[in-house]
Image (tube, rainbow, N blue to C red; front, side, top):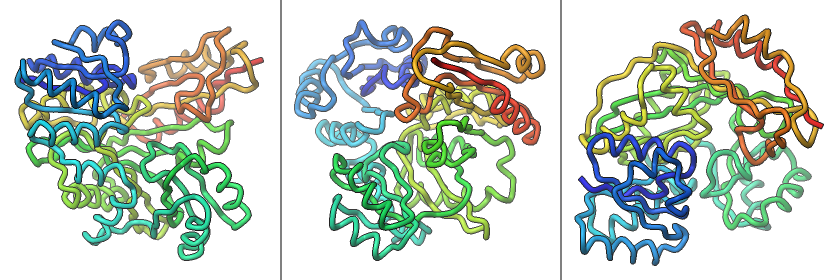
Length: 403
């Protein structure tokens, strides 16, 4: 099987998906913006062929692959980086290949169309409207009411996403979203935020995962002192999660998703109501696939590759609650010192899977631009209360300083 992989080495996780495809026996053809010499070794060593072309130039990509198809049969086109999911669908239609169509791919990229499809299926979504910055946003806000969320129609993560509680705040946000051509104006849902992540093959859900955001991403992006946590939950039979899991399955059915990775976010209100957030036809970012691997003692990169190439994959069991915590230094400039680490590792080191902090002397990262911030810890424990206790200690006692 000859499989085209768009952006095989960027972002970080893509190299491991590329390697997993090759390990199934597929011939992987990479197409990406990076020179081949700049690809991570995991991707570079897994490619049978590489086309260096700008992914933002659709004509150039189509021309390159049309020319290549005269010399080698192309069986599939895959893309796990959200900005180019629709491009992958266009290539499939251009070359007459199976897989997600442009219409279906657009449902996963355009948040307004996404919610319209789900509204028709009877799935609870926030009240929502699409709008251009300016008068249209004001009009949508009047109809929906405060508090509300303003975010890009085709965004990823929580970039350019704002909670707005008043007309005064909306006026301020309007100045910050001028560069966004089209936004979604939505009802703000007050509740805890979870994910529903899947790997599907041949129309079946082969793997399910639920993660818990501590706190909600919008809060984490608003306060520098927070150490954001994504917790992969061991017990999917917890009654609190039943509604979200059931909704997730209905969402996949409504969007006619049959193969690949998905990442969905949903809310649980205090009264028990479950509300859809959004979904992408991609894996979660910010090292969450790594957390799933530590939670299951398995390889989700390989699970995805098997699902794509064979339509099936061995079942996996969550053995641990596993979490990643991102740390943000106090101060500006370069990292000057780290405190609390030796004591924490002496007490809790047996539960730590990954410790990746910026070294002393390294410049701070912009915490608003990257969730990775100034370092991360991945830890796990079979008992949720203990996992939360471990996280609480790392949040309070581990400090990075810059100056």
